[in-house]
Length: 293
Image 1 (cartoon, rainbow, N blue to C red):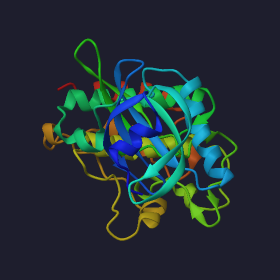
Image 2: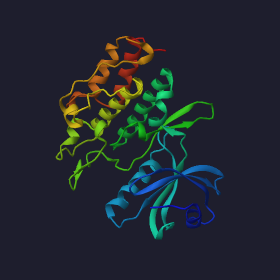
Image 3: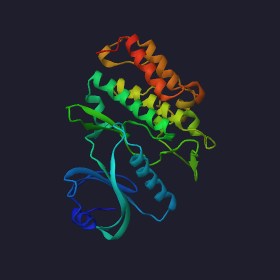
Image 4: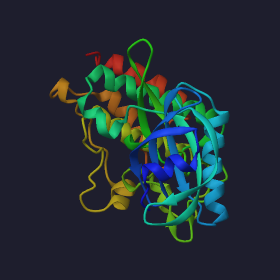
């Protein structure tokens, strides 16, 4: 799909202006826009209405989860609906859409430029957000740096927000595969999630993905497992590498490694009881290993 600025502004009338493409995927795109009513910069997510009821349900669920679960750790949403967008290269096409706060960048784009203390704050904020979701029986199902966003705070700092809830679901109601497609991102997908019959509580798999993400952020991009051959085999049989934080050179981190190994345990019931307790153990481990600079 090709989206022209004039066609986009025409679709929403006098509401949104200054469309700038932020990202594009198979079903739609995300734009930075100026909201003429709220007088603020926002992001606008649009998704092509392909006539599939499941696609509508996923998009509606994503919006509703964010709308009713208000938190400083989640991307905030505002309005949503369905709109006919003229295409620059063809006929008008119906799209679902919702507006949300504009984030500065995803952690995939930024974490390697962050100082260690900032990366530690990022990891702890991510766990806070996940703990909130899990307490409300919501599983994200695709935690990774691309779905964590930074937002500037009024105090001059940056806050971490969890976004992209396209495959999120109420826990204990989430088949792992539909029509032969396995949900999730391979580098972050827990061992049990490679099995089609694994359709129970997704929260332990979220914890696992958070463990992979945490390792990657703290190590400045290194994976916790050897993915050079096969993702599935690495997750199901590969040993977890000891964490190395570049700023700490060759310093061993036995307490933090213990927390990570439990987050990345091969069996769901071997992991931390929940993400809240995982965060508490991580904070204690960081102190025990002297990770303070």
